[in-house]
Image 1: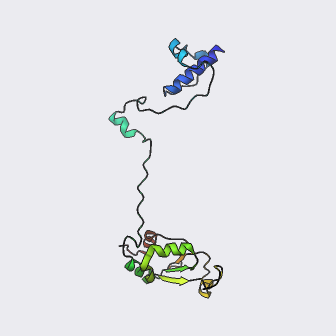
Image 2: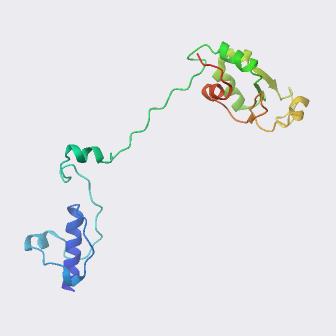
Image 3: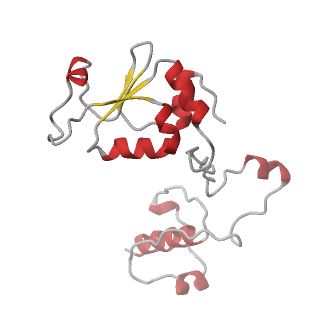
Length: 182
């Protein structure tokens, strides 16, 4: 039993000093010094997680500093999305129309309203097809939208026939069409 307690004391001391201990046979454990035994708990307890402290870490040399892994990986700064609040998107919206890009939407669709808001007043230059019928519920569509088999709003249809059924950023539309943003 004494050798088990010594093993626990050694394990606690190893964890507290942030050294890695190799698992050893109980017969190979050296007797700790008396001041270490007094500082360690007499009964087996859960070993606390090691606490990282700059004072306990070895000093970094220039060679080891370059190889060190940062503790907290910095998150890249989020790039601000371009909207009509920032710039005039008239030419961009006109370019989308020239490239035969069409947005299918519904007057009751909140995502369509979000997409329109991104364009602001420039949305008047986007080729837009309204799928809703005034006074009808959202599941009732215009014949044009039925023929195009529009099932989600907003749906962007491109000249090559590709469809994207989701709100798009100006950057996404620019990347897809080649229309330059201001």
